[in-house]
Image 1 (cartoon, one colour):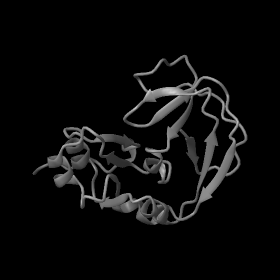
Image 2 (cartoon, rainbow, N blue to C red; image 1 turned 90 degrees about the vertical axis):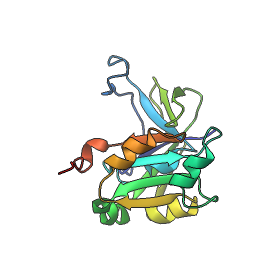
Image 3 (spheres, rainbow, N blue to C red; image 1 turned 60 degrees about the vertical axis):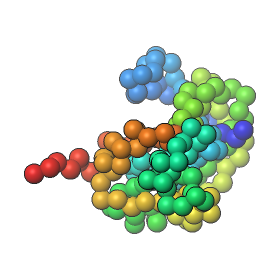
Image 4 (cartoon, helix red, strand yellow; image 1 turned 135 degrees about the vertical axis):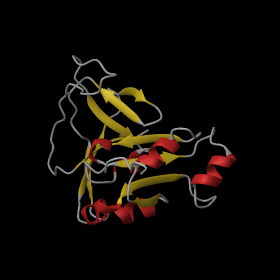
Length: 176
């Protein structure tokens, strides 16, 4: 298993635990966050880019595959809003790989691992063409005007899913 941290910061030499802001986590326990290789593509976007991501697994039904994936060769989707297209084209990301020994699983579906100890990366590389990297990994990128409809629907499916930075998403569309 490989674990990564994705950042727009070029030269991070040490990752120190930070107190989480999520309500479902102990607010007194600092954590270093990492992502596993399977869910790594979910983070190949600018940091604050809202996104809905999902991928098939052994529990994914044929009906869900048919309704949400464009072909049998596709298993993973990253959906972003139109307004992030140009920003994403012009963003470089720096990928930091960690030794996995101090990390433990925090959320299997989202691929999150955490460590309570400071971490020094064992490797760093950069990605300048985020779309190209996603395509190389056989990830479908969907550009939508608004993510909320997809977010609501995908949570009712058999896919593994993750919604990231939704606080930066366009407002929910309301019916008139």
